[in-house]
Length: 599
Image: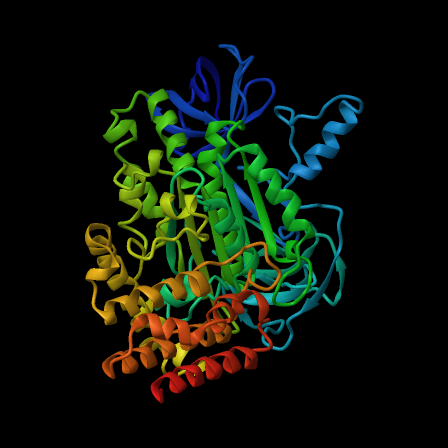
């Protein structure tokens, strides 16, 4: 029997109800006469403390509270891709249609208490049974694929036996069109028959099971040169993009979501401004997937929970997003989850903790901030999924962090760095000097460089690590030399150090800077990235030889002449499929330096 109580106190998104004996922690409840969605976060005697995911204005003491008997869960099945959800998986386009019926001539807002199923119940999908590896009469386990549905032009949805279900397959639906409510299989266990549908529910705060967690050895190619070459992300890895206001966090995350080679992208707008989320909602449906040319939304799920939406739903949106990502991981897909931003999520935690009158820790955040961040990032990974046939999938998690004033020592940033392995630090000075992406190559790091090096050597060039490390050393040396230049100018430097300054400038202008809105420069293939890097480093090596023979850095710069501009502009002028043009520029530059050597 569902628990029934009544409201005794309302404090913002927190509601206290009494008469809730028998309720469970994290149980989903319906609050008030409007039936607002809420979740129990604390139990004291027969009182339950509930965080409500909708506006609580107008709630009164004495109104009913009814339990559901289960935790906050999401529906997992065909129909997720291409949809825009709010923080508790309510489909915003369908809600807009419902609201339009009740207020056709007024400005539309999401009404409280409105209930629309996350997945369409009337839409039919063409189901193909997986008779190649499951047979009627055989035993099936959780995770076994029993059929296929073409969800979008890019993704084939794999219908799996839900977790916790196993037994003998006694019936499998023939090929045909079915809704998600129609049974497509029947499993018998201990004399009890269990109907399997195309969808099932899963609690958002519980990680989905898998067989084995694997090492993240494959790079997630993003097309952003400073990321892929200097601070690579691995499939199944974790990363953060911290930066102050105006440093380009949102544009960087848009580029990751739009250009990365992940098969499925889950984009969570968690507490961001409405105009930024509007840009995503307008830009993504019009964009094309760079890998296939198909609509980008065919592989994307958007979760919109802007700063003016209920704060409790912001806290839940992160868990909803990671659960959807794990579901597609279990099918064998590489999934990228982008959260913008975890700082706003932490602020939601802080507000709810304050309403619960919990003891605050540093800067008012709850003492369990670090453990919540750990729980979130630990759900990333590259895994071998349960069931047949064998398959490998991954969830890569990238969270934006918005430290006040760009202070990386504040609690959310400092705790996040404990649980991630890639740190792309955005620099206010670089952003103000119009250097984008404003990723600071001195502060940033990646723990995946050694793991992904074999992939680069096998698929791009055996000298990738050698060139990458040399370029990184040049940038580090240039940073050291800048202090000397500020004190005594360039005249106090040796010719070799002057060459380092020239090469570093070429690296920054011709490699690190990248225009996210340029049709050619927005995305660089690994092959183009290496070609650009090889050109610059080969010129530097030849320059070092010339300096040892008595030439100066100025003579080397003058010998290159117009070729310097060609090298810097190659990222704009040479498409990804015409790399021979970069090679021609490299040869011309080396020939010009050889002429200088010959006098």
